[in-house]
Image 1 (cartoon, rainbow, N blue to C red):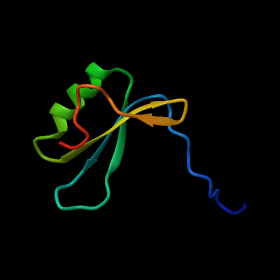
Image 2: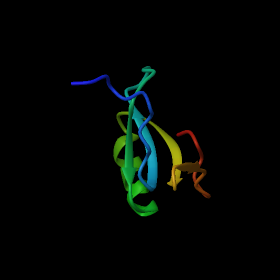
Image 3: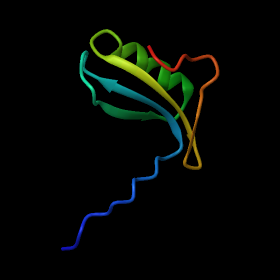
Image 4: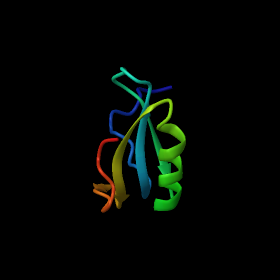
Length: 72
């Protein structure tokens, strides 16, 4: 048993949103493979949670998604 890694985990390629309870500081990141799946997830969670669109991860770099605002 050794010391835990301090290097942050690389994100897999895909579309990311952060879902958190209202009035909370932290949440969980949710990844979807396609933009259509991402839109369905946003619709599902926005009724009861705060949804923040993080962007699209490509080769470890987060990019904006055209047509989607960064905060919902």
